[in-house]
Image (cartoon, rainbow, N blue to C red):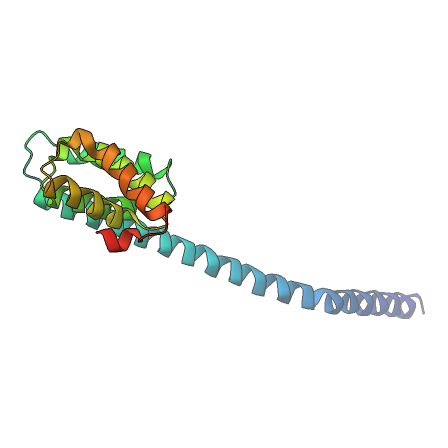
Length: 173
């Protein structure tokens, strides 16, 4: 009789535990689904970071392919672009596109970062990307045979034109 009562108590305890597990099962299912979603999001972020890094490195390789300035150090330029990306709301990839445009416009690589900084600020203020601002600035510098030291003045005049609503940077480049 004691054995029978003990069995009954054990059976009741097991049933109670089963009911408790059944009641939390949906929570575990939701947790597993949530964990899967988080893992998917992390993978997507990782892929996007890889894509951005790849785009940046491809852009720097393109810049390196057209540099004729033997004093230029592509690794220093790479670090400078990454640092600049921290100070302006333009991505490193966008800045690299601008750098390519600067070098392809015949600006010596050794002077390209100064122009890039000015163009990045102008691009931000003018609601465009760095390449567009670079094209506008270098077009004026080259058309009027101006020195690179005139970059800030050219940028200011172009931005004043944009700010006054006459044209957009895209139309100036």
